[in-house]
Image (cartoon, rainbow over all chains, first blue to last red; front, side):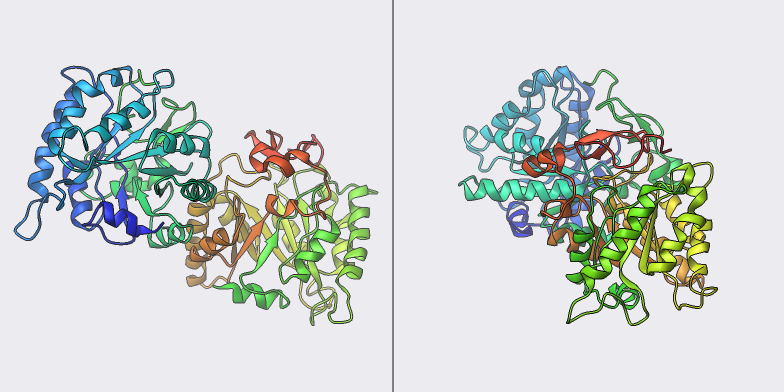
Length: 289
Length: 289
């Protein structure tokens, strides 16, 4: 599969398709909108608290209203011909409140119709992502409003990629261990992760499974890196920390600005590994899995 | 710099230049010779014990005699026009006996004239690699026997790459964290490591420093991976675990053969990290740094 599949799903994008990571607490609506306006696939910051009255859910609703304004111009529409908003939203599924997803977050997706949804960090006991994919895909049929959003699942190893495909993901984001964001305890670099996942997906397709897109993420910071990932047959490439430098980056982070990502702090909140975080700490609560 | 520099140094090689990692206790003379005969740069297994009467040093002498036979054929010479044996040798510099390098290993290099020498894992207190490079380069002048061997230094982060260049290395091997071999405690994946080291070397060249080749290693297992590394401007690509599958691989390792490298064991001997090793344990003594 090539970038063409991504471009079919997201018809405003240009090849090679560039996606910004939905970095929690870091991506502003302005930044996400700029990515989509530039021919990429912009994602809003992930949210993690799905409880009733959650400020994060309320903010997502507000941000999507703002996105619609930001993406509307005399020369282009905020939506695709199929009626999707030209943006993605992200959900960290590690918080126990994920049990309220159908009641709190799903109506926001149904209302605004983002073109893509990104899932990551499933709660270890609840394992909610299969059910969330089912709910999201249900929007495309029961609601009678056309296609459901495309669901991206972020993985850090091949076993998780296999599980994501079984859960019904449309796209698997292969995040290697050089990523600035939170990671899997058992991770691997993007080169073998992408290569092995590509092989897995190709084998699934031979077995009759509908095509899944494979994205590369982690340590990719320039055009050469993007070209290398396309050489490894990525369908699209994710930039994370690298997009945090523009003034549209929401969080003031002087260390990142002056010394680069190698100087950011680390925490072990998600995975037990020392993952890189902004100097103001992780974006969502310490009670995550 | 392109593969051309590597091909100038090692005129029998073909682009893209493929190098086998000098895996201690794993690479047989037959395997190393096959790599060079196929147009790559073959390396014998690293040795680590440089004490007087060391069996490893004696074996290196014997292996190089064997290599000369293996590389000689009616259609090709074992040596280059400049008189170098078409092979590399490797030295793990972590053992305290490295203090005897000049007395025990250097005469072997002088006698057999391998085209390349690979250094890795410097003893933290002795920090011997700068002196070893000086001794090896001295073979090219004081001995009056033509060019010295090209010296490769394996690194796992950009600070080590900078140190290797200051030590006088001809080539820096950027081994990312997906490698099967022992690694740096503070490592990074091959994509950013290669990219940042390439930039460092290019900056040094602008400053008048003679060109240093940059090699990619770690998690590269097929042609797509090689192509991706060339896209990232590697001068050559190292295959390690991947070359352990042929029958010429010295160590019987049924897990590797049946389940692939993800199933190899790990140890923390060199770096404190859980590095992958063969199921029969690490190749050199437990008293390494």
